[in-house]
Image (tube, rainbow, N blue to C red):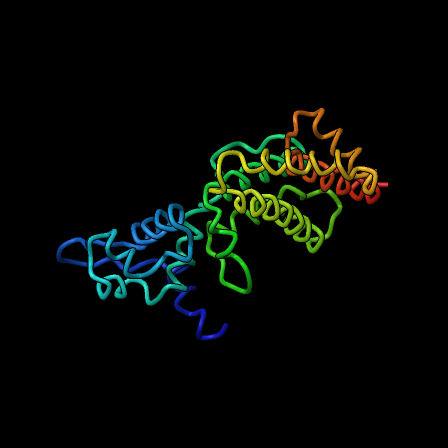
Length: 239
């Protein structure tokens, strides 16, 4: 592994040394990460800085650097703190499909609570034990289905991609005024009434969506269709 990841690996995966004697340190990695999470939750990742985290913790920036060498390592700690470990204390229930549905819904809630995580988890990076515990749960849910290890990993990636796309779309409308989706829906409805002849399939689909109270079912629809396709593959392997 390259030297650029060495500090991230150390902070995420290695036990942090505790002083044998003397006063208890005023900071620890968990407090630092959670301070960063609060800033990113409120103001977005673009507003995160070592200075702001230090100010929130009531320490100097130089004191913070004794624990975390830079912003990249800070964000890695924040991701693992925000997502947290999969709640393994709860008993696993249901077949593979029920388990994956539960997994996806839990992770969906987490990403909606911390939408900055979408931006922070793009590109090659070191994942922490909390984040990897979610991947472990998804892959293990497919034990005994006849899928290969690579296919089980791909299933987790596919579900995560759907989740990320929906959360990103919802996050993009946040702060755009009261119920921006309803406002845009009304505009689109007017356009379909005026220009529906040019787009007959879209006009018909939009009318159907209006009859269902205009609810956005993209998350649920996509989740179920992914699982339907997976069920078909698993059934094919069984035969």
